Length: 337
Image (tube, rainbow, N blue to C red; front, top):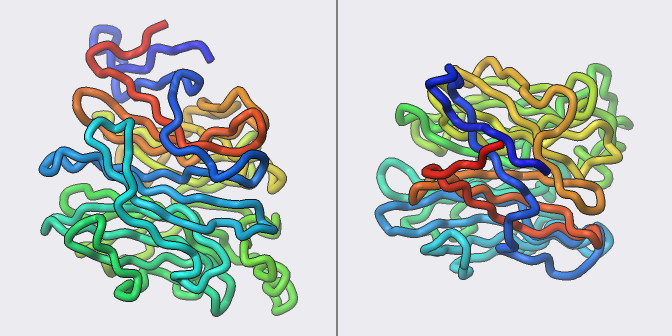
């Protein structure tokens, strides 16, 4: 991938552009548990706590479907954003769940932390999101978790992969969700959930919704904000992260053309001024891909810290597995043409 100029250039009247990176020049932060398709380390979420001088990275391990799917979620810390040590972990068995997926770590205004957990509800086999709060990232107790949303709460077929951030002291959450088909009878719903992963059925498509909260615990569902249309991202448009790039926000999202590319999405980019209207910039093709296997590069998250932007992403390896990878763009010397 050729490096491109993606920085603010006031002299050229270029504003609000995020500096991107070459995925091949990144390096492995977390390796998968084994080789081959279905073995993944990724779904990262990262924050930098300047009071503690630490990066905190949440991620999950996945095995092939027949061996257990999403089996473990971890939180690791680092002083340099590259070398991480695990400080907390939990398994799908701790949740009594068939699988778990991307979780999101957020620091609250009172100094506490919340982990938003994405997992399959064992009662109805629909994806749901639960929060658990602690004073330190290494102190989460899943027995104390509550609920943000179940699928039934908001009249959809699944909610997962939360991404939480604060603007003006208000907590906002991007949510990947599957809307209910217009005529979904009992038999169709059985087919949608018998595998405990409605996102992989192709019966309905993967959208992004927005919710907001004043306390980080109780959220109000605001509805759909980013939907599939046609083309390379005609099946899935899952917003995974954002960067503040004045005068608005740069959005990174996972896209796929059909359900056959589920689990192997690629990264697109969009821009918004107000978190309501989103303009896609990657109209014809994804903007970030892996050169290997399926080309998948997904679940990208980014944090600005220590004079740079640290990008973390799940990246397809030549053998079909996925690793968690990082690339840092130095803001004093961003990539140029």
